[in-house]
Image (cartoon, rainbow, N blue to C red; front, side):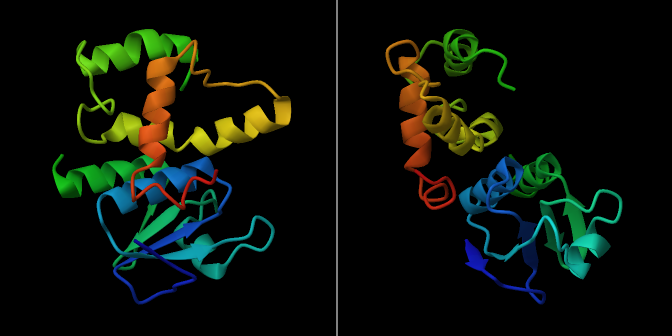
Length: 170
């Protein structure tokens, strides 16, 4: 799990920004894999030398530094973690009706991958904080329990996972 404000010297260091859903995605993936990593909060306006050196083309977070070698972009970080372990939302109602039911193959499953979290859960789960903020700002319920009961229940189960708690705020 993350050690806030940690810096260099660790085998894994994540450079991030608390409000970025891409950083949240990377943090969730690392936490779910049970990996211990240092977390360094970056600034949008005053980018650290480490960030600029680690991601010289885009100079953006997230960047995972693994034994001195940078891995840029959240999808690359998540995919890297999947290989090490071995294993957009257009319309939410379509996600509810087709994708979730398809992934679960008609059975009662806790997550898109069945009984355990998989890549789809991490990618969609990393957007839950932004969806919640949108709901608060616009006054419109995005994930409505009456219209999307499966998706709403999944979101609650996902938020309750130890590796997700504290990363996605309520």
